[in-house]
Length: 236
Ligand code: C5P
Image 1 (cartoon, rainbow, N blue to C red):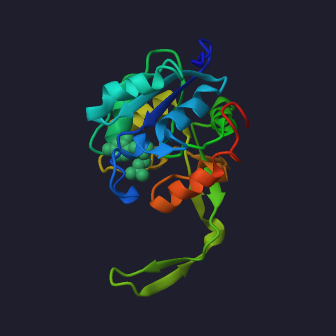
Image 2: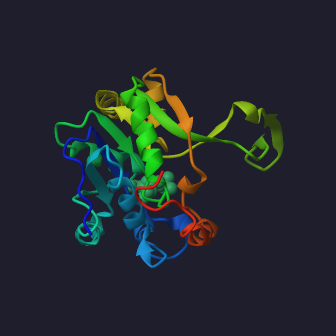
Image 3: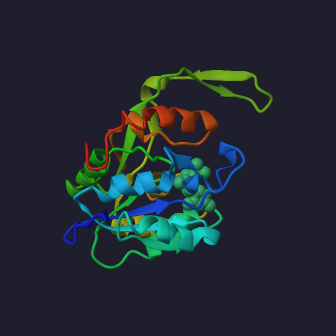
C-alpha cells in the first residue's frame, strides 16, 4: 500500500542512495542490494515514510537507475527521485535542490541504514522543532580506539569516553543546511560536518543499534538476522 505522506508535516527527508557499494563486494549499487528479498532503499524509505512529521521525501538515485528507483518506490510512498552525484555530498546537494518550499526541517538519511526505526526519524525532527539548528543520532563507542601511523604502528590511545559513533538521519533547520552546502569546499562524509564548519552547534540525540550502516558483507548478513527483530515501519 502506498503510504500517505502528511501534507501538513514540517519535515523533508533527503535520502542519498547513489553510492556504488564497493565495500559490499561485487553487485549493483548498494541501495539496490537485497535484504530479505527487497532493496535496502525500499526498507529505508518505508520506515521514513511512516513518520507522521514527514511531508516530502527526495531520493538521490544512481544516475543509471533513476527510473528503476522511481518504479521501485512508487508503491511505497510519493517520493521525488533525482540523479545522485559522484560523492555523497553532491548527492545530498542534488536532493536538497529538489525540496519544494514548505518544510523547514530537513533530515538527511543514508539509504544504507535500511533498518532505522521510524521513531528515530521523529526524535531527530523533534530536536530541531525544539530549537536546535542541527541534531544527530549517536551511540557510545564500545571498542578501545587507537590512533595509528600509515605503516600500522600505534601512536596513542584516544579517550573513548568523549567519542560517539554518528548515525543518520541527521536533522537541520533548512536555512542552516542550505548555507553549509553553499559554503562547502572539501567533501565530508556527513552533513553535520559541514554545519560544524560554519560554527553551528550540533546537538546529540540517542541513536539506535538498528540504524547500523550496511557497508560490508558482514553488515548485510547481520541485517538479514535483524530484519524480523527490528521495529517495523511506523514503530518507535
Ligand atoms: O559511501 P557511504 O557508505 O558513506 O555512503 C553513505 C550513503 O551515501 C549511502 O546511502 C550511499 O548510497 C550514499 N551515496 C550517494 N552518492 C554517492 C556516494 C554515496 O548518494 N556518490
